Image (cartoon, rainbow, N blue to C red; front, side, top):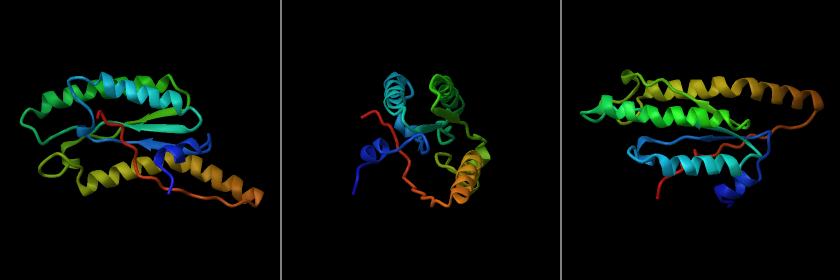
Length: 154
């Protein structure tokens, strides 16, 4: 079985990688290492399209308002970063408290469905265009689903 790195190296401009992570995948007080890793990832993988998803808010902490203000900072930096690379896009998600579980760390079923809807809405135009062109040319189309890639500070 091929590694994630090998699969990503084999991708082209016709493919897409979605990078999503959770609130435990970066250091809130020092986002610089995570930012450098993501920037390096975007730089070295310019042969395929990359979507960076917004870091989710946290509602499980007593000081969640200030923590979420801190989470907004790296999200703004990532959004600016993706504008510098033509092959990357930033996908924001809604962070309404009602879209998270009672304990507040994970998305609720409704929150997960909404993220899936946002992803589908994002992918649908390009997928429809690709399927249409493949249909007209008589070629086949293959779909590969990969688990989300998480860049961690480890």
